[in-house]
Amino acid sequence: MKPLAATILLFSHLLVLPCVADHHKESGWKDLFNGKDLSGFTQRNGSATYEVVDGTILGTTAKGSPNSFLCTDKKYGDFELTFEVKCHNRLNSGVQIRSKTKNDDPKQRVNGPQIEIEASGAKGAEAGYVYGEACYGWMTPEESRKPHKHFKDGEWNKYLVKAKGSRIQVWVNGEQVSDLVHEKAFESHPSGFIGLQVHGVGNRGPFTVAWRNLKIRESK
Image 1 (cartoon, one colour):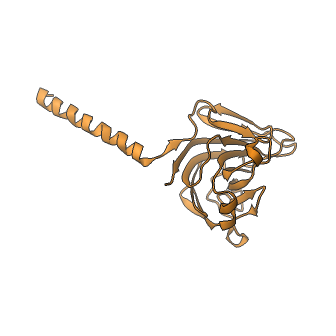
Image 2 (tube, rainbow, N blue to C red):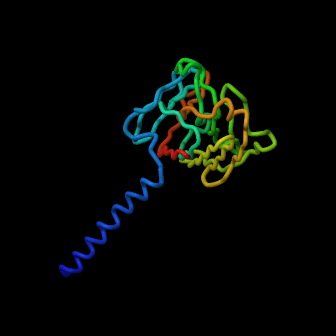
Image 3 (cartoon, rainbow, N blue to C red):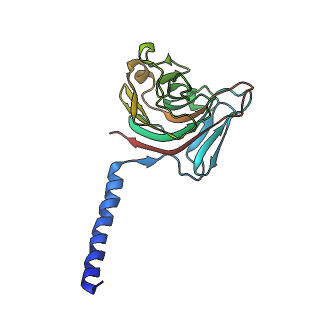
């Protein structure tokens, strides 16, 4: 390559790199999980175990344990959240949003909106609908809670959650599942932590659920 051409090419790369960096910065997306350890998270409730395995957060059920939650230390109000999850077909799970415990005590009961994670099975299921953990029961109305098969059993599944005011929207693998407006829940839970649930299974198991690529973009 001629010296002049090489100089022009190098200069063009130097111009592009700051633009790429600015683009990522402007996008506003931040990692919730660093892929190495569980810093920034605190376990609330239950005795299920959480560990980092191959760049994922792996949750494993414990016999006799109630629901367990690995929760962000930071609280979030309006945001977009994306993550990938793989769940044992016999384990129900979920991701808490805008959730809390009494007096912020990790030993107190986790409560707040939960985005459902559930294998589809032969007849379809309720992945992506919204449940009020220890507060409202199903927030998605029964008439809207139709079984579907957007969740791919035994595979990684990508979720997108948008929470803006009283509106919560959920996509599972690119398919919109929820578009919920719940004023009462927004009044009681306008902001809070995000929590990764390992559901209690009694004396069954052990079963696992894994998360990766957890990213959040806060809304202004």
